[in-house]
Image 1 (cartoon, rainbow, N blue to C red):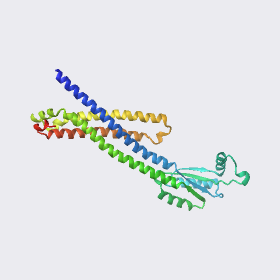
Image 2: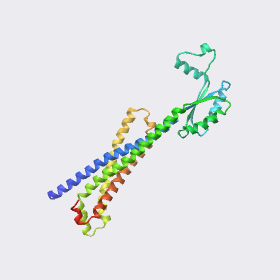
Image 3: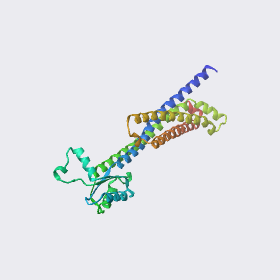
Image 4: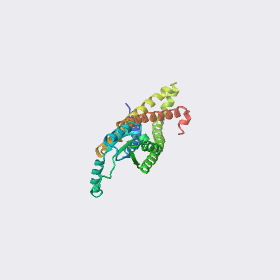
Length: 292
């Protein structure tokens, strides 16, 4: 093999390595955006499902009646979980928190039995809470009902804003990544523009000429995607080690969807960029190749 051929192969190898590294970095950014968008949705549902509606029961309601009421509410479509807190339990909790027992000077237990209802995420909003509260208050066993409406509204508004910001960021990063990868692929194809023209002169079809470039681009995209997935996986593993309970937000479904998206991005973007770059040089005449 001549020195010229060795230098050509070495240059092509460096171009492939450069394309692979740049594509990996871009895919890591895209993967992070997908990861945060999916995690934000899970975080939204997690926060909503931990907001509670407190239903205070009348003193005349017995334990059995309270448990029947609890079972009835549990079968409602909006209930995710219900905890029954008896008068005695409420007293013990308040004594522990306040450091004093009000029954010593009042002569009776002032704390009512309550039902702590955790709603499903789809019902943790202002409109749903209004009709849920209205429905529960109709029951003769209920003395009062309370929930943190302002907190729920702030949670919904803030999470909506975060979701919009992440979606806008995802669109911008997709455009930027396509531009960066396209430029890198175009440089790789540019170095072989005369080979493309020579193949045209000998009668090769456009599909035959494009095939090796597309294969190389797809191969680079797969390798870059695997590398990006490994980097993202290492970061998620660090989260699992340092943040207890993160698995409730960062689920295996989130990780699987993120990995699939990164792989598809890697294949589609590199293949599309190679297709466009090769077509550009295929449409050029011989004289135009020397002017670029």
